Amino acid sequence: MEEDGRIATLNMPYMGYRKIELIREIGYKWLVRICDSGLEMEVYEDDFVID
Image (cartoon, rainbow, N blue to C red):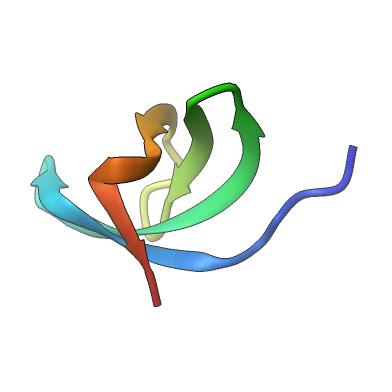
């Protein structure tokens, strides 16, 4: 499966990080990778704004 690759900004920082890379949509959530950290997690689409 191809990654989305778009960059977005979290509305509320997670552990000090705000920039994320969208990987793929999973229902109402997105699997994202936190830029500069590499941590992957799921977030709701209302929790970020695409840059």
